[in-house]
Amino acid sequence: MTWDADRYDRDQGFVSAYGRSLESFVPDDTDALLDLGCGTGTLTAELARRIPHVVGVDASTSMIDRARREHPGVEFHVADALDLPYDGDFDVVFSNAVFHWIHDHGTLLANVRRTLRPGGRLVCEFGARGNIARIDAAMGRAMRRRGLDIAVRFTFPGDDEFRRSLDSAGFRGIDVTSYDRPTPLGGGEAGLSSWLRQFYADDLAQVDEDERQAVIAEVEDGLRDDLWDASRGCWVADYRRLRAVAVR
Ligand SMILES: C[S@@+](CC[C@H](N)C(=O)[O-])C[C@H]1O[C@@H](n2cnc3c(N)ncnc32)[C@H](O)[C@@H]1O
Image (cartoon, rainbow, N blue to C red):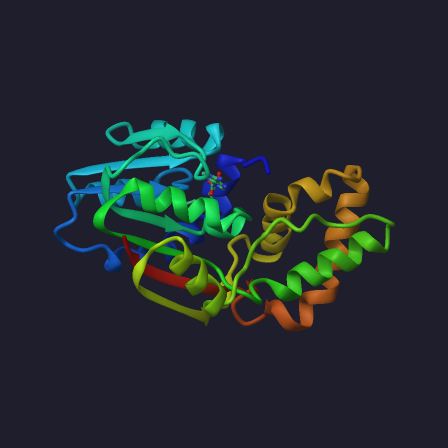
């Protein structure tokens, strides 16, 4: 998937805003932290204020370019979570809203484990089983009506499944929990449209702009009863999150 870093910061600022609560799981005596899938670096820069050595990595050059521009004092690199160039270098691997983009959790967790010092910890949060189920179903229906399909791009594991993945990768002290987190989208009436254009960009690219608008309008119509909050004037996405802490 191609990331639009400007749209991300303008319309999806809530992603890092929610990630802030994850920062409390980072121990105070952390010396070196890797922010894995750091995006435009908002949380990386915050963590760098209290941790001596912080590095942000992301697979997207557009995200890293913007992170470097926005936070010139922080170290950022382009790197794939499935091929990390580290070996026992960090006390904490921190990751917010990233693991659901990666299908191969076995290889991912092997990379995370190798990146950590013995006794170091993974602190992560991402989409849990059932995340955005209604939005995904509505998008699938609208595309199938046009003889097209949507890609299975997300991996949303259940608690037991992710616990087993951590265990198989050799982690201990595993704590996994998931919860519903209905998430108001910014942008008022246009909020869902902007969100779909970011997260379903590749699917929507299968049709021209007129048809794209028709697909989005259908999705909005189908979801309005459930996900439009008239009192607040915003769409509320049916997010469900999984939070995990585990020790190497
Ligand atoms: C929703 S953004 C979250 C960004 C940031 N963590 C935040 O809280 O704002 C997901 C990020 O994961 C990155 N990502 C997805 N797959 C990746 C991979 N295999 N390796 C590294 N980064 C990846 C994307 O490029 C994107 O920047």
